[in-house]
Amino acid sequence: MEVVFPSPQQIMRRAMLHHKGFLMGLSVIIVVTLLTILAPVLATHDPYAQDLGQRLIPPVWQEKGTWDHPLGTDNLGRDYLSRLIYGSRVSLLIGLSVMLIAGLIGTTLGLLAGYFGGKMDMFVSFLVTVRLALPAVLVAVAVVSLIGGSTRIVILVLGLLVWDRFAVVVRASTQQIRPLEYVAAAKSAGCSTFRILAQEMLPNLMNNLIVVATLEVARAILLEAALSFLGMGVQPPTPSWGLMISEGKEFMLFYPYLITIPGVALFLLLLGFNLLGDGIRDVTAPEGR
Amino acid sequence: MPDLVLELINLTKTYQVSAGAFRGKRDLRAVNGITLTLEKGEVLGLVGESGCGKTTVAKLVLSLETPTSGHIRLQGRPLTDCDSKEIARQVQPVFQDPYASLNPRKSVGSIISLPLRALKVGNKASWNKKVSEIMEVVGLAPHLRHNYPNQLSGGQRQRVAVARALIMRPQLVLCDEPTSALDVSVQAQILNLLMRLRRELGLTYLFISHNLAVVEHLATRVAVMYLGRIVEEAPTRELFLNPRHPYTQALLGSVLTPEPGLGLPDTRLGIAYPNPIDPPSGCTFHPRCPKADEKCKEHAPVPRRKGGRLVECHFVEEL
Image (cartoon, rainbow over all chains, first blue to last red; front, top):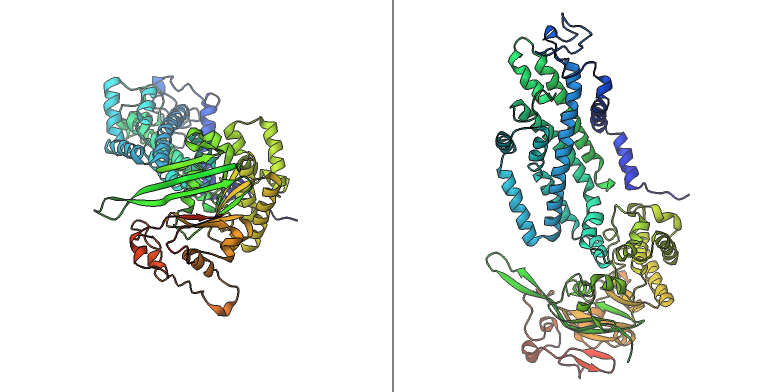
């Protein structure tokens, strides 16, 4: 009987099942994803429906709480649980879209810089340096206050701003792979440069890319929350976790749940993404390559 | 007129390297005017120390690098006239390290079929058929097709590399030290495989190696390189029986014997390999040559061809 060494995929699958942080992060993200998909089913109320007779009802675990509004209502009498559930849509949408845009820009630049080196590398490094010199929040605030905020604008502005980590990581790993013989072999097999980059090198960068991607999703969600909190991001009445914190801050002293509930939700989601990212990094250790 | 597969004519490759801080760039002549021809069916062994330019020659022939001057002709056509796909059809490499030359993310089948897919030859069904055929030819079990390189042994990996090189049925296979990363027992298997394939498929090899025993076993003709020059070229038997150039003599004298008590052989080469950025004057071998005199320090010898042999030394007549 021949003993067959497991394939890279099998090694990775096994390591994943034994990594607690990875499993925890993954479960948080699966739960949130389910929330966004099943929002119309799960939400007990219309997240936009105001009922001034029902305003500022505390959550169910407090004295005056009712099961009709398990997480209470806000200052306009909107059901907080429903807003929280719908808010996860905004967070995930923005996080994922920003990651995709930034990933596309950063990966392309990093691949070109790492593969071609020389002038191309200098050019990309210059772009990265320029980008790093611009504080993302400052630029986003400036742009949004000039042309007005909306979900689409927030996605575009953040996507065009947070690609730097992708570029840096991809450039470094491309430089590592570039001198390996399988790249020379692909070249002498007649592969076009695009094919070498996309089909020979990119799959070998995937591990690093996924780690960066999860961390960037978390960063984008946090930036969105910060912008919405400043009133420069998603505009009311759209339910967004950052916006909910912002709207709750005036009642913070007497109704602290208005801030703690979306805050905890945000914390859990970011924790999930970070755990997932760290988990993937551990799981794709050298022997899994 | 013999059927020439490859001609290298006065080929030179110069790299610009920094000679240290504040000293600017200097030229490194990795390949310094070499002329070589390769007939169909021949195995030309290219031997020399590390850093003498063997691998640069390989890169030039694969057109991974462009020559600084000189010409390369493939089947009589200048390499500069061929596009990369045409070159790929005619020349394929087998690299040194099968742990680096196979993409770890691709399955064996996909690695072997890469040249077919890159050159868009045939369709998926014919690729599968060709991969199965070539896997059988190089002695790989069919079930390995869906495995990944990390699941294979060194010898199996090198077989995959050979299969990838041969799937397009190229005229010329460029072996760049194809056995030096393998265990001794596996080396023999791969060498025998290469020999068998040469007979069965009528291949021509340019076989680069620093292992003289391997070259003696495999090559029909041997060229010895020193500091980017070819110092001696001769049919294998003649070269090994009667080396003419002092460097070839030293090289053959340096082969380790299996006898444990004998210690390291004395090559009488004295000082170490010179820095290729700062090559010695005249004959670049003179600081290490036991026969060198004043003439060697000042004038570079011209290559002299006699019969099937080429020797580049002032003392060729006396040797």
